[in-house]
Image 1 (cartoon, rainbow, N blue to C red):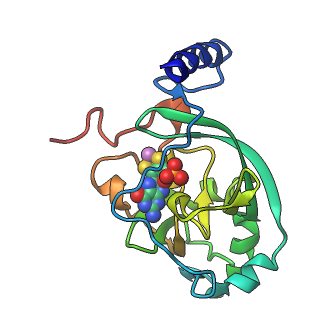
Image 2 (image 1 turned 90 degrees about the horizontal axis):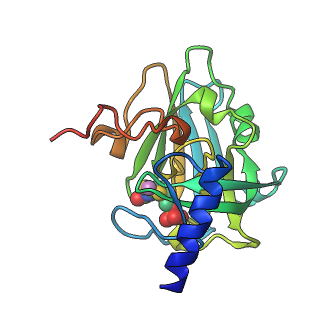
Image 3 (image 1 turned 30 degrees about the vertical axis):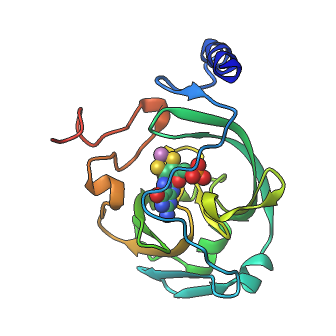
Length: 206
Ligand SMILES: Nc1nc2c(c(=O)[nH]1)N[C@H]1C(S)=C(S)[C@@H](COP(=O)(O)O)O[C@H]1N2
Ligand SMILES: [Mo]
């Protein structure tokens, strides 16, 4: 109960200063949100593959991934179910650095992100190339737990949480947009929380 009252107070303060998007409340918890089951992928079996409209198909194993330049950033996280968890410290490899190895072809405009377990989500390549998009393997100083998408998840700070794919396994570069798991069910292709782009339609279908 105390925690609840604190969260209400914190939410009001953040809203007052425009620090959380409309329709979000601030929580100090970091809820786990997974459709289906947690994937347990040992690092020695983990792989990241980039394919589709690229000059070079890239396949990185854990060692190659960890040998890349490491970046750290602190960002807020907004789930479309309305909780926001602020000031997450993420560490990992910048999306840009990984994508540079693949050399997207000029026709490549969209990316379908594939995860272990079958989850997918779509983003435009230009959003993913923003400077703070990261393949994260650490959260708040600790190895990213399997519940939160470890060994490696995508973090797309400028979009709702469902675009931050856990247990990321592959990126498919496409010329035409192809909706992912939630997007096929009515969630927004772009998903900017500051524009409240929750649903593809004004209301979810059905
Ligand atoms: N592979 C996979 N990634 C996923 C999900 C999922 O169900 N499967 N859920 C998404 C949703 S809706 C959110 S809000 C965040 C939640 O991340 P968390 O469980 O670390 O809080 O993960 C996203 N990434
Ligand atoms: Mo979410």
